[in-house]
Amino acid sequence: MNYLISLAIGLGVGLLYGALDFRSPAPPAIALVGLLGMLAGEQLWPMGRQLVAGWLS
Image: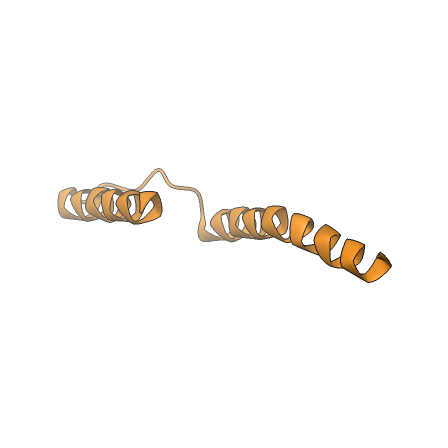
């Protein structure tokens, strides 16, 4: 639910910036893709450890 609220607020601010013809201070898209990769890796690490532990036991 928190993600949906964050997305809705971000969209609202983006619409406001567009309506006022301001340039967004957001980082370039490539930086956001890098952050997405970091989050995915953070989630995959515990899953990988659990998988390896299951194979070894």
